[in-house]
Amino acid sequence: MRYPGDRDPGPSIRRLDLYRNDGYDPGRGRVARVIWYYTSLLFFESAWLPISVWKVWLLRRFGAKVGRGVVIKPNVRIKYPWRLHVGDYVWIGQEAWIDNLDHVRLGAHCVLSQGVYLCTGSHDRRRASFDLLIKPIDIQDGAWVCARATVLQGVTVGVDGVVAAGAVVSEEVPAGAVSR
Image (cartoon, rainbow, N blue to C red; front, side):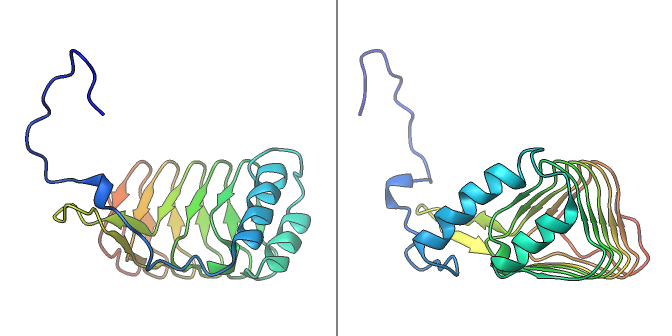
């Protein structure tokens, strides 16, 4: 709808009225997603449940594969636990956000530091319908994603790889390498 005084935006490649994600399957029905949403708000995204053992228990109840000795700090967001695989002795820092429209795998002894963002989804900027694009993320054994870093869809961080603080990573980080 146009209002008096609105500027003509001119031609645009994006037509959000054409956007459809009917082909996307979140992996669980609406009821399970709503129950997870409120569980996440109460026990993960807040500081109400600071004890990792209970958070691990909840994640497993919602279908996540979670190993032993996992530490999950307060204010962590996880989109869909049923698309999460966490190895043994993983640390997930405060305010980490695992936005997993697709699968995310965290290998054993990985660290996601404070404020890390893992994003498995994006959009096709070349199409007027702005189609949804999703790809998994694989953070392999011993890798460290430092504070406020972002790892984008389709990325693998190799064994003992490091994603530098504040980095935005859109390509593979080889084993033992440090991204910039």
